[in-house]
Length: 172
Image (tube, rainbow, N blue to C red; front, side, top):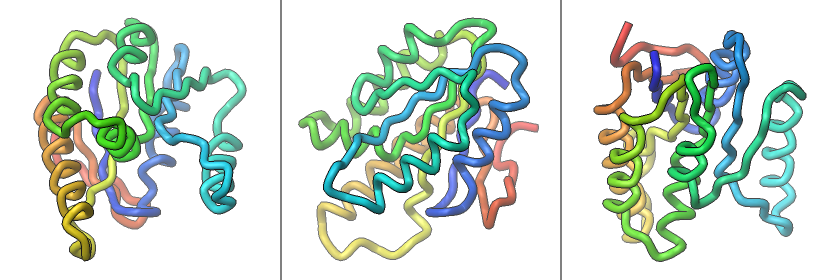
């Protein structure tokens, strides 16, 4: 399965599932982190630390809060497993930098079909939760939903994580 999309809500087990898939890979593993460091947020710092502690020393970690397409272009090889965690943070960074949601989807649609190797992308399923109170939150939720749909259309496999259990949505 060259491209897998793992969807789920907060604390559904998405990242852990992606890491399990990566651990089963015999070749090199590249972990692409899209979360920016936020020095004045101790809870966020602790979350990032937890993710880092779970990664084996043999994995290469690259930070790509904006340049995800370029990172994938240079790091994906036939024998490589690339884990992207996560599309939701990347989209947030992308929009904050002044880009549009459609540009985000188009960027991934152009590159993903051409990439060799195994790619697992983690993304939040934001449409099943509380409706955001502000228009900006609703616009982001909608943009994330569209991005998830467009990546899922390209994916060979899509799993929805529910309480740590992967449910196959697409693929075998």
